Image (cartoon, rainbow, N blue to C red; front, side, top):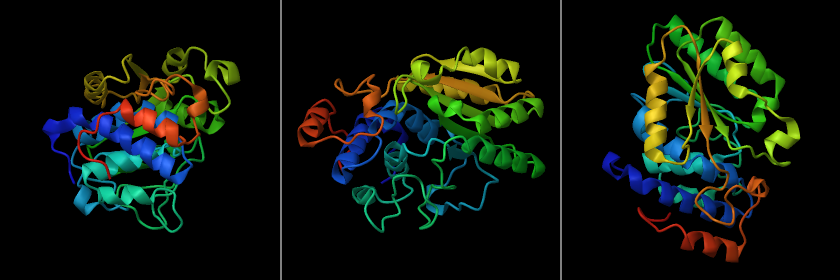
Length: 285
């Protein structure tokens, strides 16, 4: 199924249903960050990415289309749901999430060639380096398309991230748009208490990046507009950092804003409570 563009506002509730059902069935997974980034993934894959072709996806081809690299690879529930809803593979395959032999593993895997997945990710801090390589390749090939990435805010505690940020800024890699899921929540607690990022905007600017905030990171229209603003700002000798203000567990009252849902599955009772808050809009898998 490839959800029509005019049904885009029906997607967030359905994707959230997919997420909680997948994690519940597997009794494992990362629902919190997945729920919080639903609007980002929906906007990206249904509005922003240009010239992608779900039916003819080739992980070895990075020219002639926009490219997305997921760095915080543990949020596969939202990634897989959106890929399926966008038409990369059948929605029914979501039922195999984290099962033995399934290509839908807990972190993205390229071993079984799941359409839509370009790199194995989840070793935090590495995705931006990969994206830099793709962005430089596009420049060498005179490809005008862009490279998008997503990172968790806790991931920015990794040193490799800052090496890549320094490189991108100093070399003016202006076909790169990196989004930070700024929800102040990581597996061990609030980011500000585990290891504060300080003034993140000032840090990126000091490294030569342009910074765009999306204050309503769980409002689909605001995210679409913010990412379009980022696209419009590309090509001007600076990479772009999008600081996306979201809430972990968004859309479910007992999960929202609670870092403890970073990597905890729902039990039967919690699943039903969650589904009661999320009307089915486009059909469950």
